[in-house]
Image 1 (cartoon, rainbow, N blue to C red):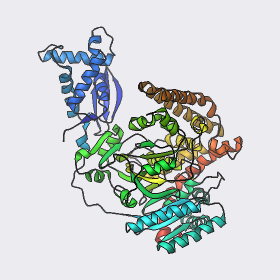
Image 2 (tube, helix red, strand yellow; image 1 turned 90 degrees about the vertical axis):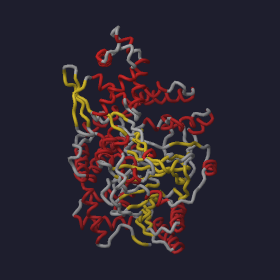
Image 3 (cartoon, rainbow, N blue to C red; image 1 turned 135 degrees about the vertical axis):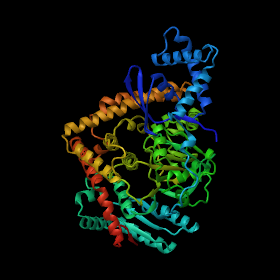
Image 4 (tube, rainbow, N blue to C red; image 1 turned 180 degrees about the vertical axis):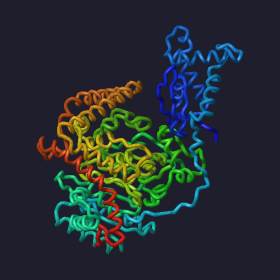
Length: 637
């Protein structure tokens, strides 16, 4: 296998006298370099052979007219000093600077970098193919989350039971229900009883009554604060959406197991993406590695995919709970593994501690599950080409929510993209809680995972599950108003991302407690100080986003006019929203509260989430003790 190299994870510090201290975070070595060397290293930001890097750098130098400009003092000082050193080096070799090939001189310098460990090769990231035997564990539970939709629940649960029967998988099924009315919950229990008899399946149920009994047992056995346990499992503040609380209940019921979590509007009909490659593995550092295909309506998308007879549990088990080393070794050839889209930090994590896949995610076809189509403006590559192929296709994509979305090859990500409609979850050791109320609880779960759980990754599988709620369409407001209104999840994300802890100096439980204390401190500060913190964070994110968008806009010279028009409009709307939106409470709180109530509730929810994070290790320990004693949250129907 030919070695390809890129710059390692390097931190740099000015050291005076024209030198820079470069700290290699992978091998923990340090070296003094001239700034020109650091600039060259930073240009080697993708995996290439040393020859390819040398040729690319030489081409860049010539393209920038750096050699010619050296003599007229037009180049930057660091690069100018580097070129002077190149000339001096060539003269010492007995050749003139003009006679010596730029790429040959650069190649020698790059070889020095590689020998010093400043460039890392992709082969250095490959583990030994002789790994100790692994303990094979299976998904033992499928959990379905539901709210006021017994008909959807029947369709969903039946499809998963039938799939498991067909593939001879013996698992438990639990329905976690936060339906509002007692009569509706009783109707659901009766329906589940009939499904149990029809399929001879083991079905458990956790509604309001079951959750209350379990919460009381947890509080008593673990001597836990009642307000914390209740916040984890119920909508105690009357927010109206308690999706995360439902997910927390599933985490507590399945503690110690691997499970599949499915939303009640999914159907266990699986399809792969076009040109899917199943024997390759990629590593990815940005947020979302998925590709998109767009359809004008529900019927077209359902007719366009080919449903395949696959065991959804086996697809998730292929990577779920496994070390990254074992995921790599499962590929037949080293060339089947790509690190091209992994940033230096991810590469450092892979080399120092390979980590594990704790969440597996498949794609979807049908409804996008996204509340705004504005994200489509930032698509790149083939997805963008499909979006902008014609103005008719483009306009349709901003009206219809019907898509196919999945990766083309298995991808392990260090990013924080997560949608909870069909997740594989390794719950054998502690995972973070979900933010109990409002939407994007799954995205906040992934963000908490990234902040507190080193070496924990999400794997995306090249398959898609059917996602078919009631047919919805995007409106003008979804595109040009909603994206510029901040939500409660933005405030929570600011609190999470503003937290720092010394790396490798805390256990996972200690990090959760420290993050919880950080949120509690924000939650009990003065309302004025808290709102200023939120305001500054939202400005920081908005400013960073605008800079990124403007750079992206300048790089898309060949984009069609209709895309260019909307992209520029999106940037301007975001810019104009900055001084207005940050003075308002989150818009999802304003739907059911006055401005003053929403202001106080925003800070209250942050404090309560901090308490939940702080106590979560004890809550999980109590759940394990209850299970050992024969008590679980779900009750057999």
